[in-house]
Amino acid sequence: MTYATNRLHAEIAYVAYHFHWGLDEILDMEHRDRLEYVRQIADLNNRINGGR
Image (cartoon, rainbow, N blue to C red; front, side):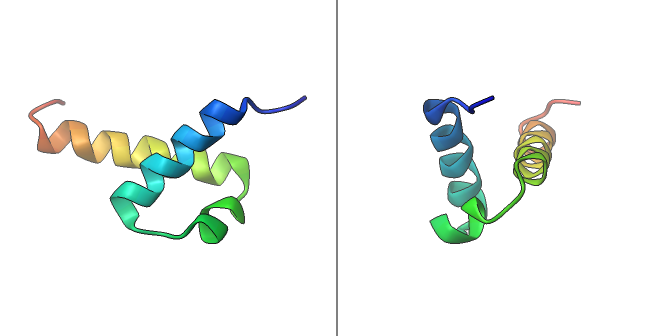
């Protein structure tokens, strides 16, 4: 099974933007770990912006 390139780029951009991590550092993560960071960032953003 392959992972959509545009989705991978979106995850990388999201994590890099919020945590200022480099491309190699983000790509070295396991997929499930990167998705967990994406989820955590989204949760933080929702709380900051009045959600939940």
